[in-house]
Image 1 (tube, rainbow, N blue to C red):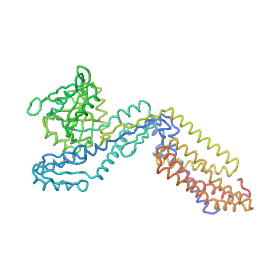
Image 2: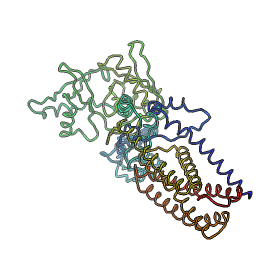
Image 3: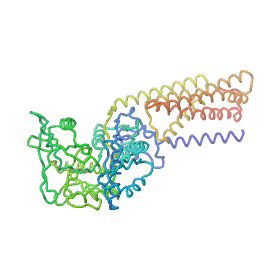
Amino acid sequence: MERSWYWRLALVIAIAVLGIYTAMPSFIYLSSTPEVRRSKTAIEDVTPDWLPEARLSMGIDLQGGLHLVMGVDTEKAVMNRVDRVGDEIAGEMKDKGKPLASARRVDDGTDLEIAMKDAADWETLKPILESRGDNWVITGPTGSSVNYSMRDERVKQLKADAVAQVIKTLRSRIDVYGVSEPEVRMRGDDAVLIQIAGLTAEEERSVKEDIIGRTAQLEFKLVDDESKYFAEIAGRAGEGSTIKLSNDTYRGPGDQIVSSPYLYAPTKEELQVFVNANPPPSDRIVSFSRIPTDEGDRIRTWLLDRKTPLTGDSIVNAQVQLNRDENQPYTALQLDRAGGVIFDQLTAANIKKRVAIVLDDNVDSAPVIQSRIPSGNVSITGGGFKSQQEVLKDANALAMVLNAGALPAPVYPQEERTVGATLGEDAVRKGNNALLASVIITILVMVGYYRLSGAIAILSMSVNMLLLFAILAALKGTLTLPGLAGLALTVGMAVDANIVQFERIREEIRLGKTVRAAVDAGFDKAFSAIFDSNVTTILSAIVLLQYGSGPIRGFAVTLLIGTAVNLFTAIIIPRVCLEYLARGAKVQTLSI
C-alpha cells in the first residue's frame, strides 16, 4: 500500500472524529424534550462541559414561538441628537461668557437655528461650530442668526446606528430574561425582526409585555406651565364634548402658587384628535398621562418643551431602592458624566419648575425641581394610585429594561405572529419522516444495486451528513423546515457523485482492466463531471443566499454547505475504501 493511502485514511478518520465532537451538542439538543430546549440553563445541564458551546438550534417553524417585527422611529433619534448638539453649543457659549439668545431645532428637521444676542459673538461661536467637523454645514451668519444643518451622510449614519443599538438592546433584554435561541436582526432600513422559538404561552406574554412591550424610551423634558394654550383651545371642544378643562397647582419660583391648565378626557385617542386639530406652538409638544377623577380614570394633557435635553442613553445603572421615610420603592438612576453635566445644568437653570419624566411617550411623573442636582443620581418614583406591590413590580421591570439598555429611539410593533407549538411539532415530525424516508430509500437502492460499493457510498453519505451538521453547529446555525428540505436533497446529491464514479469503474472493468486499474481510471475520468455539477449547484445556492430571504436562505445555506462537503466526502472516502480493496486486499473481482 502506498504511503499516501494511509495519510488519506488518517485524514478521513480525523475529520470524522472532529465532526462527531463538534456535532454532539446539536444531537443532544435536538433529542431533548421541548421543555429542556426552551431553557438555556436546562440545555446546559444536559450537555457535558467538555463539549463545545456552539450548536444547532431549531427554528420557529419547527418548535413554535413568537415572531415580531418592530419598527424603529429613526427620525426621532436624529432629532434628539440635533437637540443635544444645540444644548451643547449653548452651554459652551455660556461658559465663554457669550450666552446665546436661543439654539433650537427648526420644526422636525435636522437644522439648528442659532440666535446670538450680539452679532459680534460670531467670532466666539464660529470655532465652536467648526469643531464638529464635516458632519455639519454652516450657513450664515445673517445678522445675529446662523443656520447649522446636519449633512445627509451623518443623518443616514445616525439612523443606521439607532437601529443597530435597538437590535443590541433588545437582544440583551431577551438574554436577561433567559429564553433560548432568540433571533434579533435588522429588517429593511428601519425595522427589527425578533423570532424566539419554543416559548410557552406564559413566557410569550412576559416577553412581549415586560421586555419588548416596555420599550423604556426615557426622556426628560421641561413642562411649560406658563402657557395658556390649553385654556385657549378648551372652548373649541363644543357642546356635549367629554373633553374638560382643569388646573393643577404647585409652589413655583418664590413660593408663588403656579396654576397650570390642562385638558382631560376618557381616552387618549379623543384628546389626540382634538390636539391634532388645534396644534400647539412649533416649539412645544403635547404628551399624556393617566389620572384618577370622580368619574373614574381619565387621560390628561401636558405641554412640554419640544427639545429633549436628556435621554435614557445616558443611564449607566438602574436599580430599585426603598424610600424608608415613605416605605415606597423607586427606581434610582445613575447617569454618565455627560448626562450628569446636562442634568446639573437643567436643574440649576429651572429650580422650582417642573421637569417631565417621559417614558414611552407618556408622562410618568413631573416633579418640581427643588434644587440643583449635580451628582448625576436621579430617582423615578412611580405609584400614583397603584398598590405598593404594583409599584414594586413596575420599578423592577423599569430597572431591568434600563439596565439592559435604554433605546435610542422609540420602537413600535409592525407585525406580530405566533406559531403554535402543535404546528411546530407536526412540522418536525413530517420533516423527520421525509428525511428518514429519503435515507432509507437511498440505502436500499444503493446497497441493492451496487452491493458492497453501495455500502461504501452510504458510509460516504453518512460522513457527509455528519460534517454538514458539524459545520452548521460550529456556525451556530438554525435548523428550519426549508433546511430539512435541503438536508433531504443533500442526501440524494451525496450519492449522485458515487453513482457517476461507480458507473465509470464498471465501464473500465467491462473493457477488461484489472480492479486496481479500473478503480484508478474510473475516479480520474469521473472527477471533472462531479466537480462541474457540484460547482454549478454551489453557484446556484450562492445566488439564492444572496437574493433570497427567510425560508429561501435557510434552504440555500443547507444546500451550499452540503454540496461543498460533498466534494470531499464523495471523492475521498469511496476512493480510500476501494483502493484498499484493490491494493490492500488485492481482490480480483469488485462488488459493484
